[in-house]
Image (tube, rainbow, N blue to C red):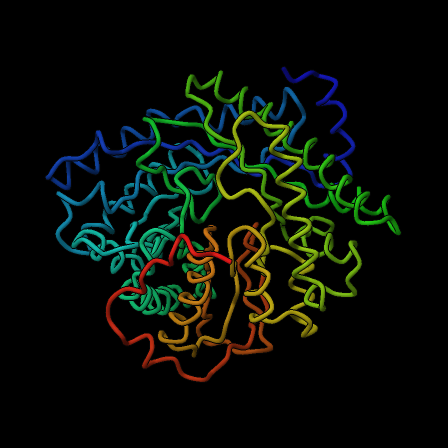
Length: 454
């Protein structure tokens, strides 16, 4: 039972340290909508989403008012659309119509994003999977609120390198299709390995096939709260440092638990999980990079960054697990460059490179996130970066993801501006040595062995 006293304890964190509940995400199963006629399918999808999510924003606002806890986003995730449209969609344009239906439903309910324009192709692609993937550039160019994701690998199945190669091409096409907005479409497109079924965070959220008909998942945040707590522990040893992070993560997660239970009760929809990720924003003081610097780094990217991030990620999990009844999603520390002012600053001064970010992804949640690269970057190079990050996830049995944004018309030294929570990003240099021959090979990298470890 969560007491009012616990909520009152968080007031100063909300007022001074940017504590918020980052998102309430309503997951919706769209499989009952499936028919083989596209017009009927679009009607079914629109009605089911607006019917179940019609009160989501209102309920979120009521909870905000009752507890004085900011809930930044109210979102929807749906069953991967490659499955939903498999019988009715026979061309990429058919899937684009479904994307436009999702966009209209999202606008009607008032949510800021709807996720699930997705395909799960970790072992192979069906025809519907490939059609959806090829539709992504136009789908994201012609919608405002739709987010897309493609899972190209897993620890159990290996890496689908045909899908990796195709996604390199799709990212470039999406960048070109949205070139007039600094290639914004790529900011709403995630390539995963080991994607979870219950992630509430965009752009990678989808309602997994292991889920029920509807579920409430909540993502908490609070980098500023953790940083403020660490300021008080300057000069302390590692034991005290870890205890401080754990205790703070506990408090943050209890706020998320309260919101999740309240939203579940008011909407009459089961509570799923709390995702206790530290999710930064462009706001000053709401930065994971600044936490790492408070731990003792002159700049994020310096030697010791990966170790400091590993410590942070582990203590956040340890503290959060004790505070919530069901923890899931991604849960850890996010390091999106464009959404974290400290990361932006480090990249601009040359302390943070893509290679260092890749090393950091071995020990934290998600992966290479919201990274702007030159618009001339080739599809093969993009695919090579995707493959590297997916391999980290596959081998280490963890979720990794990539949001790369080749900004058409811009080069190293320029800035891409996305706005809102998506922020702005310096164009970062990429290694220009070719991986074309590697990426051109067909087939799949086999799954790693699961025994004989030493």
